[in-house]
Amino acid sequence: MKHIITTFIFTALLLSCNTSDKTKTTTKTSDAAQTTSAPQPTETDKALQLINSDEALIATALLAAPEASRGECKVIGYNMKGEFVTFKEGSNEFIVLVDNPNKEGFSAACYQKDLDPFMARGRALKAEGKTHQEIFDIREAEVKAEQLHIPTGATLHIYSGPKTLYNPETANVADAKLRYVVYLPWATAESTGLPEAPAASNHPWIMNPGTHRAHIMISPIAAD
Image 1 (cartoon, rainbow, N blue to C red):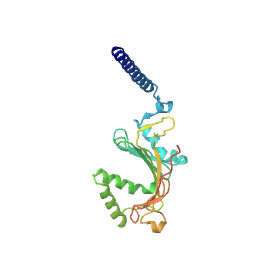
Image 2 (cartoon, rainbow, N blue to C red; image 1 turned 30 degrees about the vertical axis):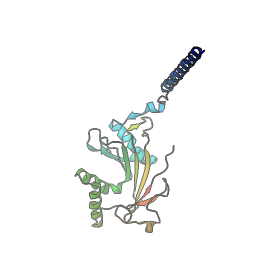
Image 3 (cartoon, rainbow, N blue to C red; image 1 turned 90 degrees about the vertical axis):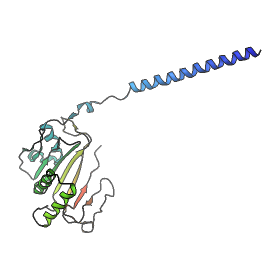
Image 4 (cartoon, rainbow, N blue to C red; image 1 turned 180 degrees about the vertical axis):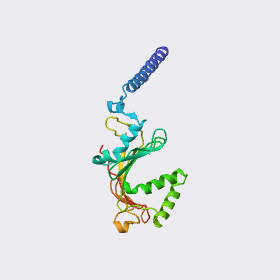
């Protein structure tokens, strides 16, 4: 009798192990099936290309400018060879600065042409190896000495994002967003009524208050 009971228990344990092994096998098969059926790139993703030509630099940078003004903007910046050039002359109030292809991510800008001396001075100081704070201090001293001028109300449009992929049909850059800077030299929170930090992601606020570089920051919510 004892032998029969022992045999019965051993058989039950063996069946239990087989069931457990099947469960594990089923789980592994299920995981493999999930991996195989992972979402494939969409047609939109496949349409994206690297920004790797001067034509692409120009097309993507022009999206920083107001749509109605893009055809007449002056376009400048570093080309694919690393040379700072004028890609095309303009006839309106905007200058467009293309993305620097030698830097990570994407950042193009469009600014009112009277800001060009201020912007050019910043580029020159950066080329000399000056730090961000040194550039800030030097330009502040030059604005105070009236050697450099920042027009009140002049606007800078920035189109930027972490990727350098774009859609050749639309020139839209993947994950890039627009933000705006309205320069108000020496303005403060008190003189404008604006807070020194945004109340929400799309609310205006004043940055660098009380300095030559005081400006209103506006970061619209992305359309998507």
